Length: 276
Ligand SMILES: NC(=O)c1ccc[n+]([C@@H]2O[C@H](COP(=O)([O-])OP(=O)(O)OC[C@H]3O[C@@H](n4cnc5c(N)ncnc54)[C@H](O)[C@@H]3O)[C@@H](O)[C@H]2O)c1
Image (cartoon, rainbow, N blue to C red; front, top):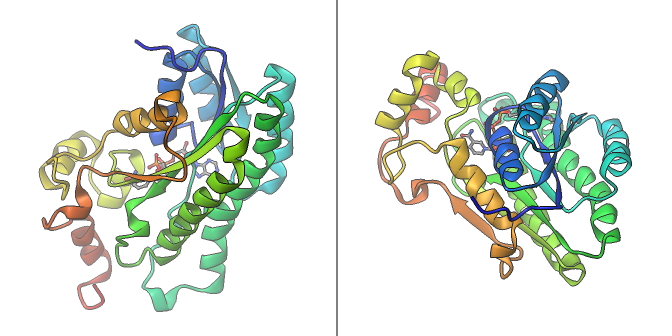
């Protein structure tokens, strides 16, 4: 196993479960000290205990994107505990309420953007001075979504928030390259996490089998959180030294596939076919 993140401190948002958890585990396995940020402090504490049991250093912090007052205390505890910050992996996001576009209220748009865009932006802005103060460079990796380019019906605020974050990723790249900070994103396709199980209304035992059998990826399998984590670790590492402002598709080729999408079927069941 490579140890690309020895002596590095990485903050991962949404690290209590799903993709963020896999990212936290992978960074820790390669030597990083991992700050586990999540809106669910109990989950963050469980992940902290798990990482510690493997010999990794970590810190659980309450960090609910959208509650902007959580950001400063989280940064203070990172600096107090470790005195540095090198990597931010922005994994947390909310899907928002699924609604036909004309039913989306201003409040629906505001809530999704408050978390996915503004929450990520303010957190990253707060983290950058700490990354820069070390003068060692660093990396920001934003977890985006294929939906920004290829939205499903009824996901307009979510898809637009991820498109805006892709733009923010490029702005970060152009403004911080001189400080040796590379900002990149990954546009991910369907990944097997609890939120996908919920969206497909499947029971957990058969969900993975069903998801693999019905997925519309070219690879014929739904993505695993560990596969996303490997891409995040690549972008966070010096192996990606020539990538800046890139949005890398990590979607099993979903964007090129012509297979029927199981999420469309689930949406049809929920909303009927007229509007899809
Ligand atoms: N799962 C997929 O198929 C898929 C597809 C495309 C993009 N994504 C993106 O991947 C990322 C992770 O998705 P996931 O499916 O693992 O998520 P998830 O819903 O399983 O949540 C993972 C963790 O994030 C935390 N979280 C949720 N909202 C938060 C907030 N506002 N502040 C802090 N923590 C919060 C949860 O408590 C949980 O521990 C998201 O950015 C999502 O948009 C996921």
